[in-house]
Image (cartoon, rainbow, N blue to C red; front, side, top):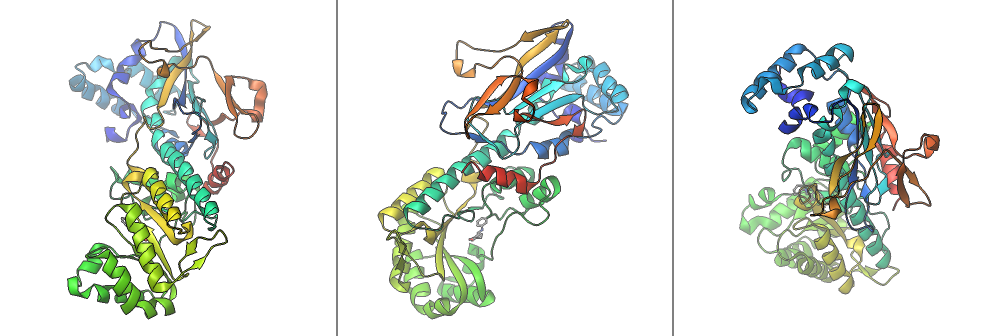
Length: 466
Ligand code: AOY
């Protein structure tokens, strides 16, 4: 038995003590999850709940009385009291609900892009004895802040890339223009996989294999949802010795005679590499190769380095013009910038390229920490708050509004989410007659998953908001 893998332990310590703290005769707690981001111009793209439901909520979650006993023993030391645990509550779930969680969760379909301050998910107990369970689940359910934040940032990045493509006469298809380099910089294999999966909602380039397997197991992505190519790292170049970088480069062209291949080229001198090694010694091998060499700078101030690399490669290989008059390298050579990339830096590089007359088609970006790690729950100010209770048979609106920060004001009541003209969403009081027009769809009830989205569906939905 392992408490780590048990629903009883998957919460904040203080929540173990909360069942005694609601008003006497409470029979229902209804809570909702929203972004309190103050900027109405940037929305949030909901994604990731289905993974958390399938992994942590669906099916028999309380398996036997010994789990309850083990948690009680743990709390005896951790919180100084064996009696702290809601033993009768958990025994009730085990005995009368077969260990299945008596909750109803409604949520906006995954891949929907919603402006801030709207209810994205609601949670309520379906058994009056289990009023305490709703907010017990806040801890695990709130963790969808992460995939939702990655997908939201990416959606904005995709619009920036698309707009620059249009401006510079480049291909409007940008799914491969932001590649996930973030596996190593994530805080755990699970976080990396979740982050990659969220990145795949809007893009198709990734080196985080775990995320593609997550999408296979939890979102029916039977074939990999993301793609990569052979690429060098510094060790495979520097191991040849400083005087043999050109041999390392040549080996890359020979080992992968067809298709895309990327080569990190800043081990010693990126300018010499572009001008002399790629540009002269290996010039003809690149021109005659059946594919595209992608040159990767990896140090220096990215906007300047990228423009210098493009100028140097343009000198060596020539260029044509897009229909908007921007320079375009020959199809057999491109650049990927994967160092220092977050949304701000990507935008600065695109701006510098535009200034220097280079089309967006010449470049792809890689992003690790900026993509998967430079985010937190406050990036979009996500919060899970109680908005209604039933006490002694009476419904009561519940909300908070601290005088010390009215930005933390929460909504009251039960909610439906409606879409007026496309992109205009409104959270309204719950209205059963809305039927299919209520975007808060029941996805979980009493341990059962009610909707099982495919990743294709999620992607298609996300794409409608572009
Ligand atoms: N990958 C495109 C394919 C991937 C990578 C992964 C950290 C790639 C590099 C490349 O071209 O250069 C993790 C750093 C780089």
